Structures are given as structure tokens and as C-alpha cells.
Image (cartoon, rainbow over all chains, first blue to last red; front, side, top):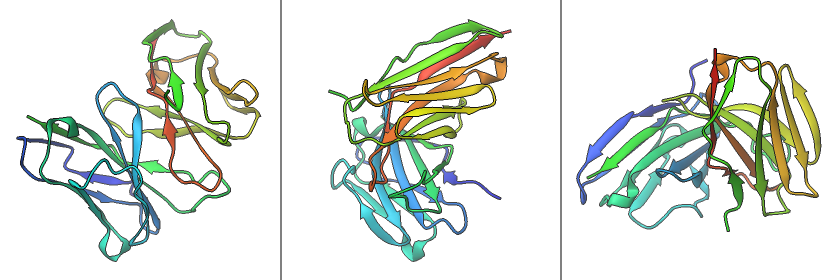
Length: 117
Length: 111
């Protein structure tokens, strides 16, 4: 079974530019999550999709971030315009079971490292 | 105040040692507690999962949760060089899907 795939693995852009990160979840996983780790800080939740619907976007920092999941398969996270503080590693995760109960085991991708200069 | 506190280390131990990793948290509503292991340039991988208080053992790994103290631990027995990684605690509320992570502890097991 293929895991969660993220692209690009590393992106270096200048302040003000746009970057789009892509996540391909495990096939059949309805739940898709975006998390972010800023240097020296903990991994923080950004948002959660159930299929193509945004279930919870309470962690999105501001309106420069736009996440989509058209058709309920892969997802993109666009940052426009990028600022210096957006630098970090963006992780995507997916799960099969939406878990009010149960572990709701998340499988993480390797992350997309974003460097904004 | 952070939701989850974790000593970032780094922690270096000789092969065969017992390792103790810990996290404290402030939100008494957390019921699901997890330990993730992250190797360099990889994503976090679920290692252990515990619901509410108690102990759980899986091979050389034991997870403990003390909800009265808001304190969770991961013990690694007979540590191996392949255990060298960053260990992240994470937790969540029932009915919620977002995880709250600690900053992670970097562990090196020296052969």
C-alpha cells in the first residue's frame, strides 16, 4: 500500500511569491489533515477534510492560506503571498476512520519543507 | 501556556539502556494519547496509542498515562541504535480530530 505522498519535498521561494503544496493521501482514506511545524516549535494542526468538505479549518493562520480537496482525493495547500514566518515543514496526514471514538490512526507524509527568503 | 510540554533533549544513551520520555499537558479533556516516532526527513509514525489512564506494552515499548497528574511517559527497554529518532507525544479530545503535539525529544542510542 502506498503511503501519503507529498510534493514538493522542499521549496525555496521569495517573500511575496506563491507556493502550492500537494498531498496524495492513502487510497480510500476519507480524512485528510494538514499540519505545520515551524522551526523550534511543535507540530500544529491547520485543517481537516472529510472527503472534499472542510470539517475543521480552525488552525489556518490567516487568509493567505487556501486549502482545497477537489473530488475528495488529493489536496493542495496554497500560500499566497508567502511571508517569512510561513517557513516550516508542512505535513499531510490521512486516516480511514473519523474518530470521535477509537484511535483514528493518522498516517503522515514525509512533509514539504518551505523556505521563504 | 502550551497545551503540551515536552523536553526537547537531546538525549543520548548507550545501547541497552532504558529510556524514559515524558510529556505533561494542561487540558484535562484529553483522552487519547499517542507517541509518534520520527526519523530524519520522514513523517511522524505512530508508535503507541493509549486511551485514558493506564499502561500499554508493545514489545520493548511501554506507554503510561497518569491523568490525575496530566503526565504521560514512554519507556523503551533494551534500547537499540535503530531507536535513534525524535519522539513526539500527541493527544486529543474525544469528538475532536486535531492532535496537539509536544515539541519532540531527540534520542540517540550509542552503539
